[in-house]
Image 1 (cartoon, one colour):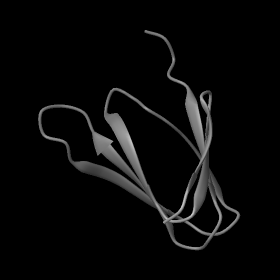
Image 2: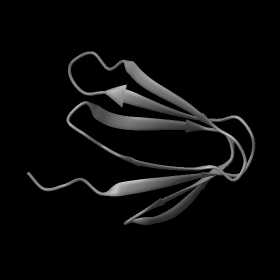
Image 3: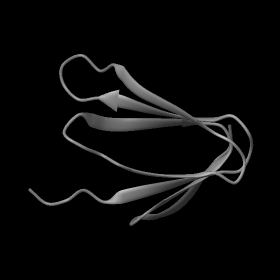
Length: 71
């Protein structure tokens, strides 16, 4: 199996939430992190993580480009 790409979440304000969601028939929250302004988190999708929800003002960098979350 190929190694999934990493994404980088760069918080632009205090209190940015990064929430991991599980794979499978029942999608559930399985992990949550809180970032403050200037903090960076490096993450990747795994056999357990199928999606991530980012709440707050942040830049998300991936192999596909950069996107800005607004709130």
